[in-house]
Length: 437
Ligand code: XUL
Ligand code: CO
Image 1 (cartoon, rainbow, N blue to C red):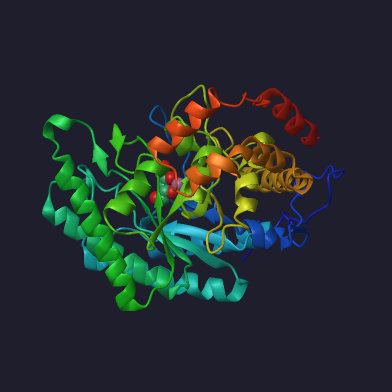
Image 2: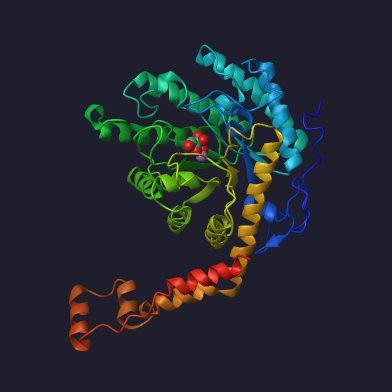
Protein backbone atom coordinates (compact mmCIF):
# COMPACT_ATOMS: atom_id res chain seq x y z
CA UNK A 1 0.00 0.00 0.00
CA UNK A 2 1.56 3.36 -0.97
CA UNK A 3 1.92 5.94 1.81
CA UNK A 4 2.82 8.88 -0.41
CA UNK A 5 0.13 8.27 -3.04
CA UNK A 6 -0.31 11.97 -3.79
CA UNK A 7 3.40 12.47 -4.53
CA UNK A 8 4.82 11.47 -7.92
CA UNK A 9 8.41 10.33 -8.46
CA UNK A 10 10.77 13.30 -8.27
CA UNK A 11 12.44 13.96 -11.62
CA UNK A 12 14.90 16.46 -13.09
CA UNK A 13 13.08 19.38 -14.72
CA UNK A 14 15.97 21.87 -14.97
CA UNK A 15 16.64 25.28 -13.39
CA UNK A 16 13.59 26.98 -14.93
CA UNK A 17 11.10 24.57 -13.37
CA UNK A 18 8.73 26.07 -10.82
CA UNK A 19 7.74 22.64 -9.50
CA UNK A 20 8.88 22.43 -5.86
CA UNK A 21 8.85 18.62 -6.07
CA UNK A 22 11.29 18.44 -9.01
CA UNK A 23 15.06 18.60 -9.21
CA UNK A 24 16.40 21.82 -10.73
CA UNK A 25 20.06 20.77 -10.73
CA UNK A 26 20.36 17.09 -9.77
CA UNK A 27 20.24 15.28 -13.08
CA UNK A 28 21.20 11.68 -12.20
CA UNK A 29 22.58 10.68 -15.60
CA UNK A 30 24.40 13.92 -16.41
CA UNK A 31 28.17 13.50 -16.42
CA UNK A 32 30.47 15.52 -14.19
CA UNK A 33 34.16 14.86 -14.89
CA UNK A 34 33.22 11.59 -16.57
CA UNK A 35 30.94 10.28 -13.78
CA UNK A 36 27.16 10.41 -13.70
CA UNK A 37 25.82 12.50 -10.82
CA UNK A 38 24.24 9.33 -9.48
CA UNK A 39 27.66 7.63 -9.27
CA UNK A 40 29.47 10.72 -8.07
CA UNK A 41 27.22 11.44 -5.08
CA UNK A 42 25.80 8.05 -4.13
CA UNK A 43 23.11 9.89 -2.15
CA UNK A 44 21.81 8.17 0.93
CA UNK A 45 18.82 8.73 3.22
CA UNK A 46 19.51 8.26 6.91
CA UNK A 47 16.98 6.12 8.71
CA UNK A 48 17.33 7.67 12.17
CA UNK A 49 16.39 11.28 11.43
CA UNK A 50 14.10 10.66 8.48
CA UNK A 51 12.10 7.72 9.83
CA UNK A 52 12.67 7.85 13.58
CA UNK A 53 12.97 11.59 14.21
CA UNK A 54 10.06 12.93 16.25
CA UNK A 55 10.84 16.63 16.42
CA UNK A 56 11.33 16.55 20.19
CA UNK A 57 14.09 18.74 21.61
CA UNK A 58 15.35 19.41 25.16
CA UNK A 59 12.57 21.97 25.59
CA UNK A 60 9.59 20.32 23.96
CA UNK A 61 7.73 17.21 22.88
CA UNK A 62 7.37 15.48 19.53
CA UNK A 63 5.81 17.51 16.73
CA UNK A 64 6.34 15.51 13.52
CA UNK A 65 3.27 13.96 11.88
CA UNK A 66 4.04 10.45 10.68
CA UNK A 67 0.60 8.97 10.03
CA UNK A 68 1.98 5.53 9.15
CA UNK A 69 3.70 5.16 12.54
CA UNK A 70 1.57 4.00 15.50
CA UNK A 71 4.32 5.04 17.92
CA UNK A 72 4.68 1.50 19.28
CA UNK A 73 7.78 -0.69 19.56
CA UNK A 74 6.11 -3.56 17.74
CA UNK A 75 7.76 -5.51 14.94
CA UNK A 76 4.76 -4.77 12.72
CA UNK A 77 5.26 -1.05 13.19
CA UNK A 78 8.98 -1.43 12.45
CA UNK A 79 8.15 -3.31 9.24
CA UNK A 80 5.66 -0.66 8.20
CA UNK A 81 8.36 1.99 8.63
CA UNK A 82 10.61 -0.01 6.31
CA UNK A 83 7.88 -0.03 3.65
CA UNK A 84 7.44 3.73 3.98
CA UNK A 85 11.19 4.31 3.88
CA UNK A 86 11.66 2.35 0.66
CA UNK A 87 8.69 4.03 -0.99
CA UNK A 88 10.13 7.42 0.00
CA UNK A 89 13.62 6.58 -1.31
CA UNK A 90 12.24 5.19 -4.53
CA UNK A 91 10.14 8.29 -5.18
CA UNK A 92 13.14 10.48 -4.40
CA UNK A 93 15.42 8.44 -6.66
CA UNK A 94 18.04 7.84 -3.96
CA UNK A 95 20.04 4.62 -4.31
CA UNK A 96 21.30 4.16 -0.73
CA UNK A 97 20.31 4.30 2.93
CA UNK A 98 22.09 4.02 6.28
CA UNK A 99 20.87 2.79 9.66
CA UNK A 100 21.70 2.07 13.28
CA UNK A 101 20.45 -1.28 14.61
CA UNK A 102 18.07 0.42 17.05
CA UNK A 103 16.55 2.71 14.38
CA UNK A 104 15.26 -0.15 12.30
CA UNK A 105 14.37 -2.67 15.02
CA UNK A 106 13.19 -2.25 18.60
CA UNK A 107 15.52 -3.01 21.49
CA UNK A 108 14.32 -6.09 23.39
CA UNK A 109 14.54 -6.90 27.10
CA UNK A 110 17.67 -8.98 26.54
CA UNK A 111 20.46 -9.03 23.98
CA UNK A 112 19.05 -12.26 22.56
CA UNK A 113 15.65 -10.60 22.08
CA UNK A 114 17.21 -7.50 20.49
CA UNK A 115 19.17 -9.70 18.09
CA UNK A 116 16.01 -11.57 17.18
CA UNK A 117 14.15 -8.31 16.52
CA UNK A 118 16.97 -7.06 14.30
CA UNK A 119 17.06 -10.34 12.37
CA UNK A 120 13.34 -10.09 11.65
CA UNK A 121 13.69 -6.56 10.28
CA UNK A 122 16.87 -7.38 8.33
CA UNK A 123 14.87 -10.03 6.50
CA UNK A 124 12.30 -7.41 5.61
CA UNK A 125 14.99 -4.89 4.59
CA UNK A 126 16.59 -7.51 2.37
CA UNK A 127 13.30 -8.13 0.58
CA UNK A 128 12.76 -4.40 0.12
CA UNK A 129 16.32 -3.92 -1.20
CA UNK A 130 15.75 -6.70 -3.69
CA UNK A 131 12.45 -5.37 -4.98
CA UNK A 132 13.63 -1.74 -5.30
CA UNK A 133 17.37 -2.03 -6.07
CA UNK A 134 18.11 0.37 -3.19
CA UNK A 135 21.33 -0.56 -1.38
CA UNK A 136 22.83 -0.19 2.08
CA UNK A 137 25.62 2.41 2.16
CA UNK A 138 26.48 1.66 5.77
CA UNK A 139 25.24 0.09 8.94
CA UNK A 140 26.19 0.98 12.49
CA UNK A 141 25.36 0.15 16.10
CA UNK A 142 23.66 2.60 18.42
CA UNK A 143 26.05 2.50 21.38
CA UNK A 144 24.81 5.68 23.04
CA UNK A 145 21.01 5.85 23.60
CA UNK A 146 20.45 3.12 26.18
CA UNK A 147 21.23 4.09 29.83
CA UNK A 148 23.81 1.26 30.01
CA UNK A 149 26.03 3.45 27.84
CA UNK A 150 26.04 6.39 30.26
CA UNK A 151 29.85 6.12 30.68
CA UNK A 152 30.47 5.25 27.03
CA UNK A 153 30.62 1.90 25.24
CA UNK A 154 34.15 0.83 24.24
CA UNK A 155 35.49 3.47 26.65
CA UNK A 156 33.11 2.66 29.52
CA UNK A 157 34.69 2.03 32.91
CA UNK A 158 32.37 -0.99 33.16
CA UNK A 159 33.88 -4.06 31.42
CA UNK A 160 30.45 -5.67 31.02
CA UNK A 161 29.25 -2.66 29.09
CA UNK A 162 32.31 -2.97 26.80
CA UNK A 163 31.39 -6.62 26.25
CA UNK A 164 27.76 -5.75 25.55
CA UNK A 165 28.80 -3.11 23.00
CA UNK A 166 31.15 -5.60 21.34
CA UNK A 167 28.33 -8.13 21.10
CA UNK A 168 26.08 -5.48 19.58
CA UNK A 169 28.70 -4.53 16.97
CA UNK A 170 29.20 -8.19 16.08
CA UNK A 171 25.52 -8.60 15.33
CA UNK A 172 25.10 -5.36 13.34
CA UNK A 173 28.25 -6.04 11.34
CA UNK A 174 26.83 -9.43 10.42
CA UNK A 175 23.51 -7.79 9.47
CA UNK A 176 25.36 -5.17 7.39
CA UNK A 177 27.27 -7.96 5.66
CA UNK A 178 24.08 -9.90 5.03
CA UNK A 179 22.50 -6.80 3.46
CA UNK A 180 25.51 -6.20 1.20
CA UNK A 181 26.42 -2.98 3.08
CA UNK A 182 29.41 -1.25 1.52
CA UNK A 183 30.73 0.38 4.71
CA UNK A 184 30.46 0.10 8.48
CA UNK A 185 30.54 3.29 10.56
CA UNK A 186 31.81 3.96 14.08
CA UNK A 187 30.61 7.20 15.54
CA UNK A 188 31.92 7.30 19.08
CA UNK A 189 28.51 8.17 20.58
CA UNK A 190 29.64 8.62 24.16
CA UNK A 191 33.32 7.69 23.69
CA UNK A 192 34.81 10.61 25.54
CA UNK A 193 34.69 12.13 28.99
CA UNK A 194 32.72 14.63 31.01
CA UNK A 195 35.43 15.16 33.63
CA UNK A 196 39.13 14.23 33.79
CA UNK A 197 39.07 13.81 37.60
CA UNK A 198 37.29 10.46 37.21
CA UNK A 199 38.82 9.40 33.87
CA UNK A 200 41.77 7.17 33.00
CA UNK A 201 42.24 8.57 29.52
CA UNK A 202 45.06 6.21 28.55
CA UNK A 203 43.06 3.14 29.53
CA UNK A 204 39.94 4.38 27.72
CA UNK A 205 41.86 5.08 24.50
CA UNK A 206 43.55 1.68 24.69
CA UNK A 207 40.16 0.02 25.16
CA UNK A 208 38.82 1.86 22.11
CA UNK A 209 41.76 0.57 20.05
CA UNK A 210 41.19 -2.97 21.30
CA UNK A 211 37.51 -2.64 20.34
CA UNK A 212 38.42 -1.51 16.82
CA UNK A 213 40.86 -4.40 16.38
CA UNK A 214 38.18 -6.82 17.54
CA UNK A 215 35.89 -5.37 14.85
CA UNK A 216 38.59 -5.68 12.17
CA UNK A 217 39.25 -9.29 13.22
CA UNK A 218 35.56 -10.15 13.12
CA UNK A 219 35.16 -8.60 9.66
CA UNK A 220 37.99 -10.87 8.45
CA UNK A 221 36.39 -13.86 10.10
CA UNK A 222 33.00 -13.40 8.45
CA UNK A 223 34.40 -12.17 5.12
CA UNK A 224 32.96 -8.65 5.42
CA UNK A 225 34.98 -6.57 2.95
CA UNK A 226 33.16 -3.25 3.53
CA UNK A 227 35.13 -0.14 4.45
CA UNK A 228 35.31 0.77 8.15
CA UNK A 229 34.75 4.45 8.80
CA UNK A 230 35.36 6.60 11.89
CA UNK A 231 33.14 9.63 12.17
CA UNK A 232 34.90 12.55 13.89
CA UNK A 233 32.93 14.76 16.28
CA UNK A 234 34.56 16.96 18.92
CA UNK A 235 31.87 17.19 21.60
CA UNK A 236 28.18 16.53 22.28
CA UNK A 237 27.01 14.56 24.10
CA UNK A 238 30.29 14.45 26.06
CA UNK A 239 32.42 17.49 26.81
CA UNK A 240 35.27 15.91 24.85
CA UNK A 241 34.82 13.12 22.31
CA UNK A 242 37.97 11.13 21.54
CA UNK A 243 37.20 11.20 17.79
CA UNK A 244 37.55 14.99 18.00
CA UNK A 245 38.37 15.80 14.37
CA UNK A 246 40.03 14.26 11.32
CA UNK A 247 43.51 14.91 12.74
CA UNK A 248 42.73 13.29 16.12
CA UNK A 249 41.11 10.28 14.42
CA UNK A 250 44.04 9.80 12.06
CA UNK A 251 46.50 10.00 14.93
CA UNK A 252 44.46 7.32 16.76
CA UNK A 253 44.32 5.12 13.66
CA UNK A 254 48.05 5.44 13.05
CA UNK A 255 49.16 5.02 16.68
CA UNK A 256 47.05 1.89 16.99
CA UNK A 257 48.13 0.37 13.68
CA UNK A 258 44.68 0.53 12.15
CA UNK A 259 45.96 2.17 8.93
CA UNK A 260 44.50 0.51 5.89
CA UNK A 261 41.50 -0.72 7.86
CA UNK A 262 39.73 2.50 8.79
CA UNK A 263 38.92 5.67 6.83
CA UNK A 264 36.80 8.66 7.86
CA UNK A 265 33.16 9.66 7.50
CA UNK A 266 33.26 13.46 7.63
CA UNK A 267 30.17 15.41 8.78
CA UNK A 268 29.76 19.13 8.18
CA UNK A 269 28.20 20.09 11.51
CA UNK A 270 30.87 18.11 13.37
CA UNK A 271 33.59 20.01 11.49
CA UNK A 272 31.98 23.29 12.57
CA UNK A 273 31.81 22.18 16.20
CA UNK A 274 35.53 21.36 16.01
CA UNK A 275 36.26 24.91 14.84
CA UNK A 276 37.05 23.79 11.30
CA UNK A 277 35.39 24.25 7.94
CA UNK A 278 34.02 21.18 6.18
CA UNK A 279 36.53 21.85 3.40
CA UNK A 280 39.38 21.68 5.92
CA UNK A 281 38.21 18.34 7.31
CA UNK A 282 37.66 16.88 3.84
CA UNK A 283 41.03 18.05 2.57
CA UNK A 284 42.84 16.83 5.70
CA UNK A 285 41.24 13.40 5.26
CA UNK A 286 41.87 13.34 1.51
CA UNK A 287 45.58 14.10 1.66
CA UNK A 288 45.96 11.20 4.11
CA UNK A 289 44.06 8.88 1.76
CA UNK A 290 41.34 8.61 4.39
CA UNK A 291 38.32 10.41 2.93
CA UNK A 292 35.79 7.58 2.90
CA UNK A 293 32.31 9.08 2.97
CA UNK A 294 30.40 12.17 4.07
CA UNK A 295 27.46 12.94 6.33
CA UNK A 296 26.00 15.87 4.45
CA UNK A 297 24.32 18.45 6.63
CA UNK A 298 25.01 21.87 8.06
CA UNK A 299 24.87 23.60 11.43
CA UNK A 300 23.64 26.97 12.54
CA UNK A 301 26.60 29.14 13.48
CA UNK A 302 24.47 31.18 15.87
CA UNK A 303 23.18 28.17 17.82
CA UNK A 304 26.49 26.38 18.35
CA UNK A 305 25.14 22.84 18.71
CA UNK A 306 24.62 19.94 16.35
CA UNK A 307 21.45 21.13 14.59
CA UNK A 308 21.89 18.71 11.65
CA UNK A 309 20.13 20.87 9.08
CA UNK A 310 19.85 19.98 5.41
CA UNK A 311 22.65 21.58 3.37
CA UNK A 312 21.44 24.37 1.07
CA UNK A 313 24.46 26.70 1.00
CA UNK A 314 26.07 26.59 -2.44
CA UNK A 315 29.40 27.95 -1.19
CA UNK A 316 29.53 24.99 1.19
CA UNK A 317 28.65 22.37 -1.42
CA UNK A 318 31.06 23.93 -3.94
CA UNK A 319 33.87 23.67 -1.40
CA UNK A 320 32.94 20.05 -0.62
CA UNK A 321 32.88 19.16 -4.30
CA UNK A 322 36.25 20.81 -5.00
CA UNK A 323 37.79 18.24 -2.65
CA UNK A 324 35.57 15.30 -3.62
CA UNK A 325 36.18 15.77 -7.36
CA UNK A 326 39.93 15.93 -6.67
CA UNK A 327 39.72 12.35 -5.38
CA UNK A 328 37.31 11.30 -8.15
CA UNK A 329 34.28 10.69 -5.94
CA UNK A 330 33.60 8.89 -2.70
CA UNK A 331 32.86 5.27 -3.66
CA UNK A 332 32.53 2.92 -1.85
CA UNK A 333 31.38 5.79 0.42
CA UNK A 334 28.64 8.24 -0.45
CA UNK A 335 26.74 11.38 0.47
CA UNK A 336 24.49 10.52 3.40
CA UNK A 337 22.01 13.14 4.55
CA UNK A 338 22.58 12.91 8.30
CA UNK A 339 20.10 15.76 8.57
CA UNK A 340 16.69 16.35 10.05
CA UNK A 341 13.78 18.57 9.18
CA UNK A 342 13.07 21.29 11.75
CA UNK A 343 10.43 20.42 14.32
CA UNK A 344 8.29 23.17 12.83
CA UNK A 345 8.40 21.37 9.42
CA UNK A 346 6.14 18.66 10.71
CA UNK A 347 4.39 17.37 7.58
CA UNK A 348 5.63 14.31 5.65
CA UNK A 349 6.00 16.41 2.47
CA UNK A 350 8.71 18.43 4.24
CA UNK A 351 10.91 15.31 4.03
CA UNK A 352 10.74 15.61 0.24
CA UNK A 353 11.49 19.34 0.20
CA UNK A 354 14.46 18.81 2.51
CA UNK A 355 16.10 16.02 0.50
CA UNK A 356 15.40 17.65 -2.88
CA UNK A 357 17.03 20.86 -1.61
CA UNK A 358 20.11 18.99 -0.35
CA UNK A 359 20.53 17.00 -3.56
CA UNK A 360 20.10 20.10 -5.71
CA UNK A 361 22.58 22.05 -3.59
CA UNK A 362 25.18 19.31 -4.03
CA UNK A 363 24.49 19.04 -7.77
CA UNK A 364 24.90 22.78 -8.13
CA UNK A 365 28.10 22.73 -6.07
CA UNK A 366 29.46 19.94 -8.26
CA UNK A 367 28.76 21.83 -11.49
CA UNK A 368 30.42 24.97 -10.12
CA UNK A 369 33.41 23.05 -8.74
CA UNK A 370 33.84 21.21 -12.06
CA UNK A 371 33.83 24.53 -13.96
CA UNK A 372 36.45 25.98 -11.58
CA UNK A 373 38.57 22.87 -12.01
CA UNK A 374 38.15 22.83 -15.80
CA UNK A 375 39.51 26.36 -16.05
CA UNK A 376 42.35 25.39 -13.70
CA UNK A 377 41.98 28.66 -11.77
CA UNK A 378 42.94 27.45 -8.32
CA UNK A 379 45.31 24.75 -9.48
CA UNK A 380 47.43 27.18 -11.53
CA UNK A 381 47.68 29.70 -8.71
CA UNK A 382 48.59 27.06 -6.13
CA UNK A 383 51.17 25.45 -8.41
CA UNK A 384 52.76 28.81 -9.09
CA UNK A 385 52.75 29.68 -5.39
CA UNK A 386 55.04 26.74 -4.56
CA UNK A 387 57.17 26.90 -7.73
CA UNK A 388 60.33 27.67 -5.72
CA UNK A 389 60.19 24.04 -4.48
CA UNK A 390 60.34 22.74 -8.08
CA UNK A 391 63.99 23.69 -8.54
CA UNK A 392 67.22 24.64 -6.75
CA UNK A 393 67.34 24.56 -2.97
CA UNK A 394 63.55 23.98 -2.74
CA UNK A 395 63.81 20.80 -4.78
CA UNK A 396 66.70 19.58 -2.61
CA UNK A 397 64.65 20.28 0.56
CA UNK A 398 61.63 18.35 -0.74
CA UNK A 399 63.83 15.40 -1.67
CA UNK A 400 65.23 15.37 1.86
CA UNK A 401 68.69 16.08 0.45
CA UNK A 402 69.33 19.43 2.15
CA UNK A 403 70.76 19.64 5.68
CA UNK A 404 70.63 22.62 8.03
CA UNK A 405 74.25 23.26 7.05
CA UNK A 406 73.35 23.21 3.33
CA UNK A 407 70.60 25.76 3.99
CA UNK A 408 73.03 27.91 5.95
CA UNK A 409 75.63 27.78 3.16
CA UNK A 410 72.94 28.63 0.59
CA UNK A 411 71.62 31.62 2.55
CA UNK A 412 75.09 32.90 3.41
CA UNK A 413 75.85 32.93 -0.31
CA UNK A 414 72.53 34.57 -1.32
CA UNK A 415 72.25 36.98 1.57
CA UNK A 416 68.45 37.32 1.63
CA UNK A 417 65.53 35.13 0.47
CA UNK A 418 63.95 35.87 -2.91
CA UNK A 419 61.10 38.38 -2.62
CA UNK A 420 57.70 37.00 -1.58
CA UNK A 421 54.75 37.18 -3.96
CA UNK A 422 51.16 38.11 -3.10
CA UNK A 423 48.80 35.39 -1.80
CA UNK A 424 46.01 36.97 -3.90
CA UNK A 425 43.31 35.78 -1.49
CA UNK A 426 40.80 38.50 -2.34
CA UNK A 427 41.38 38.00 -6.07
CA UNK A 428 40.65 34.28 -5.69
CA UNK A 429 37.56 34.86 -3.56
CA UNK A 430 36.26 37.15 -6.33
CA UNK A 431 37.07 34.55 -8.99
CA UNK A 432 35.13 31.87 -7.07
CA UNK A 433 32.17 34.24 -6.75
CA UNK A 434 32.21 34.68 -10.53
CA UNK A 435 31.50 30.96 -10.88
CA UNK A 436 28.61 31.02 -8.41
CA UNK A 437 26.07 32.29 -10.86
C1 XUL B 1 25.72 12.03 15.60
C2 XUL B 1 25.91 11.43 14.28
C3 XUL B 1 25.50 10.00 14.15
C4 XUL B 1 26.38 9.19 13.26
C5 XUL B 1 26.02 7.71 13.24
O1 XUL B 1 26.05 13.36 15.66
O2 XUL B 1 26.36 12.06 13.35
O3 XUL B 1 24.18 9.97 13.71
O4 XUL B 1 26.35 9.65 11.96
O5 XUL B 1 26.06 7.13 14.48
CO1 CO C 1 26.70 11.59 11.33
